Amino acid sequence: GVSGAAVAPLAGRAGDRGWNRPASALALAAVAGAMALAGAARAGWLALGPGAALALLVVAAGVLDAGVIADQALARQALNGVRPEARGRLNGLYTGTFFLGAAAGSALAVPAYARGGWATVAALAAGCGVAALAVVARRPPR
Image (cartoon, rainbow, N blue to C red; front, side):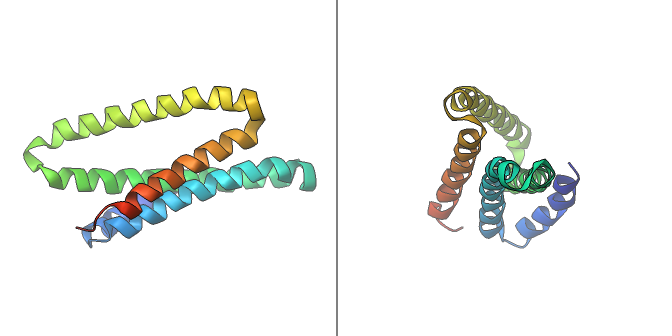
């Protein structure tokens, strides 16, 4: 949680400067990269031993937390600028949608793990980050 707490104000400043799109792209790339690194931890376990695998997982968790929190901060900032008078409703809708997405990810992770183990779960999560990054890249600049 420390990396997310550290990156949230930085993401807010980036959004204040109008850098929402590149900062969102960086945050989502961090999410995808963190999950690729977490997937590599399994190979690290086999090749380098459990200490190296644990180190990879710790780094991946920090990068993942930073990427997710930065993306949330930027999304909420953009959302609050759409209709300031509806800020509470929009934040509620955003939060509900975020939790539905998290629940869907959890539901997909179980069969992914059953079919291919940790590497498949990590690849699925990294793919979700890449898909979100593609959405940001296609979004017209404001």
